[in-house]
Structure formats: C-alpha cells, structure tokens
Image 1 (cartoon, rainbow, N blue to C red):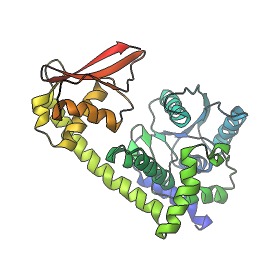
Image 2 (image 1 turned 90 degrees about the vertical axis):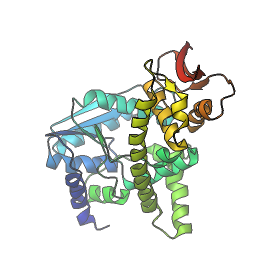
Image 3 (image 1 turned 120 degrees about the vertical axis):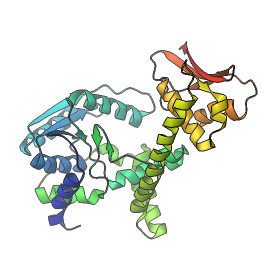
Image 4 (image 1 turned 180 degrees about the horizontal axis):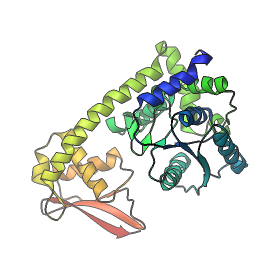
Length: 317
C-alpha cells in the first residue's frame, strides 16, 4: 500500500473502534503489528505499553527492553516488561498465549488492552479452526472487542502495519519463531494461505475474515438463546433436566451443555466431549461418565446422567 497512508489508516481504525476509557494499554511484542499500533495509540490517548517476555528464546530480555525503550520514545506514559513462565498445557503456542494473557490482565490496572491482531491473523485463526473441526465457534475467529481485550486492526492487512513502521522510521523486531515451520500457524502463513490465494485467484484472507464475522454474529445469537434455555433447564441443585433438554434443537441443546460445563469449571472443551455429554440426552443407554477438560487444580471433571438429570463431579488426579 501507499507508505504515506498507513499511519492514517491505523489512526482511523483506532478512532472508529470506539473503545471506552481515558487511557489504554497496548500489548507490545516489538514486532511490526504491535509496534505500529503502539506508535499510533500513543498519539491518541495516554498509553501504557505492556511488553511480555516469554523467556523462550536466548536474548529475549534484550528484545523486551528494546521494545520498552521504543514505547517510551514513541510517547507512551509508561512501559513495563512482564516476565512470565510458560507451561506446557495445550502445546507451546497455547501455553505461551495463556501465560501472556494472564500477565497482561494482572498488569493492566483496569484499563482496556489493545492487541495488534490483523486481518491476516484472523484468516489464519479461521483456518486453524477448520482444521480442528470444532464447529462454528472455532471458525468464528477472534472478536474485535472482548473486554478488556480489543483488536482495532482486525480489518487491516498486515502490510498496513509494516508500511506504517516504514512511514514512521521504526525498526521492528523480527521474531525468529515466525520463520520456523514447526509451528502450525507459521506454515499456514507461509505455505497454505499463499497456495489458496494462487488457486482461488486472490482475496482469500478477506473472504475468511468475512466468514468469521458472519459466523460470530450467528454464534452470539445462538449463545443468547442458549443462556435462556440453560436457565430454564437448571434444577435447584444446578444440574440439568434431561427432559427439558430433549425438547431443544440439537445445536441449541449442545450450546446449553457447553455453557453448563463451563460454569461447572470445565475448560478447553472439544466438540467430541460436548457431543459425548449430549448423548446422555439423545442416546441414553446407561453409559458411564464423560471426562471433560478441567480448570480445577489437581481435579478431573466428569459429567454423567443420574435419575434423569445431568450432573458433574470431580475426582483427584
């Protein structure tokens, strides 16, 4: 794109996002997307840069400190480095993401947090969802606004942020992990999306982003209906009445079950787990409980059917 218009495009996206608050934070990695976002955000509102050091690469502390100094030079009122310990749950990318969001949430001091995800990131997320086969919710991608998280650049291509850095004379950090094909997202970015663009004649990233928007709107509507149905199907003990569940359409019933499981401490639910619990309603044959992902420390979580209701219980790991 025209290098002289990139900063204006980012400024327009930030202004149009309508994010509340007198101040905000920016999650700054030092890469071109977050660096360009930080530069523009600091001209619009008092901005604190939060730099997460995952400590997964040699010299990561120096990269983080360079980003912190860039943020101050760009006019941020504050900038701090957040060093985290990355676990192993869900693989390296998921574990790093979990540690990063937890650190950002602890440090934001009540302010909204701007994230530098672009339309390209959204397209990659949709493809990842398709590959997992986790249904419409996974393919719906990232929300532009999911307070306290805000993604004002979801409508802009990655080329815009790169051009903005050039326009402003900024030198972003180039993450070496973005060149390692052991990461699924890197292969999608460097191999799959270019191939799709070639085969389908271009516009694939934009089409995937539009698909995410359409599915997200549908999903939010169904979730609202599921919330009403969940309240109606709950027993006084917090279990679910299978007779009431059996009256619901399949898609709505599974959303009710998903919401109920999450309320009970489940996490990282898969479509297979949800359908397994759903069979307690649609194909009851006296089967045993279904283990689901648990956010409870040192506890496994199970869903089961007893006396016509769905119940949950835990067992020590």
